[in-house]
Image 1 (cartoon, rainbow, N blue to C red):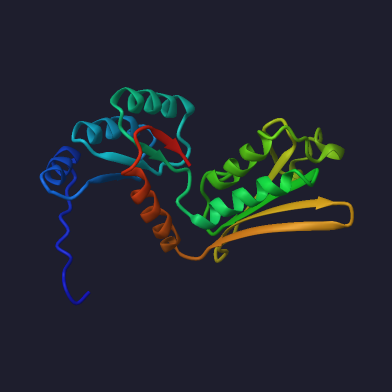
Image 2 (cartoon, helix red, strand yellow):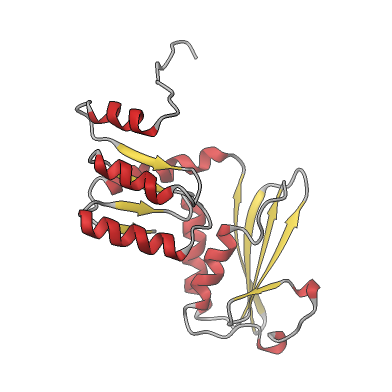
Length: 214
């Protein structure tokens, strides 16, 4: 860069929050850390009068419930975002719309490196579809053939995960009905895809007075 940004980097959260709280600008804490530290991080941010955005995949429901109770008591807004990708959110919304018209669905995801599978995106889509009262893939919902993928929930939503170096990170949802197949796909080619969603989340959280899960 032609000019240094002069952004201070510290590893003490209390010092960081104290420094930010002294400025006139509105401070927002963005937590990319670990499920085990989220609750305490949000508590510290709230103590300094700052709202939080939590982007920590695979948080336990107990942690989310504790955060909700704390934010309600403190009347402080907090945004819990399973994903910051706008494309991923649009894919989820499209999948929900399509699910009312099709009885067969499969989720196929690819990643260039091995991580926890199914991914948070696949889990989120499967959970969304499973909460709609539909029953999918009736013909083989009870099969135990490993090659058929993992069934998430009790509604027959199957997830298949591929890991191959060089593959883009992608999530594809296939729906089928009589005589047709609908394919919904989202690919991430660079982590900069999270930035528009992050900026949107920051603008939103400053107006919140309760916890919101998006």
